Length: 103
Image 1 (cartoon, one colour):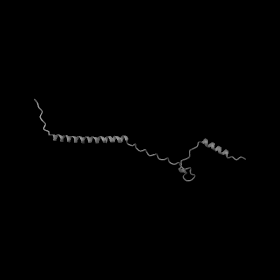
Image 2 (cartoon, rainbow, N blue to C red):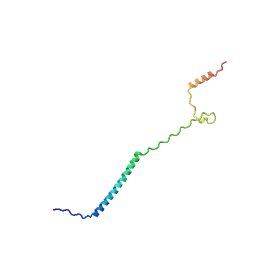
Image 3 (cartoon, rainbow, N blue to C red):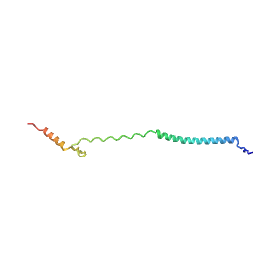
Image 4 (tube, rainbow, N blue to C red):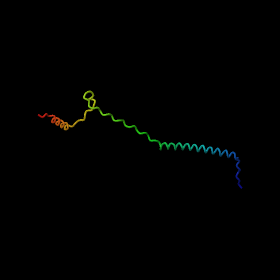
């Protein structure tokens, strides 16, 4: 009949072996936990991060040009808008007829 050989491990060696195995497993668990916690932290930052600040407001529009100068600087201003000949003629006729002296 076949018989298994007896193991010659002592109890103290098995205890030390188990303790080393538990310590190694604990270190492995802590390394994996650290790795996954950093991944979870990264995902948390990507999902719940505050939005970027609003863009700065556009600059205010430039001030309107000063009224048409009668002396120096009038040549620096843009020309006034052109009037159509018909409206100018109507204004001229109205002006001439309203300023007539009645005798």
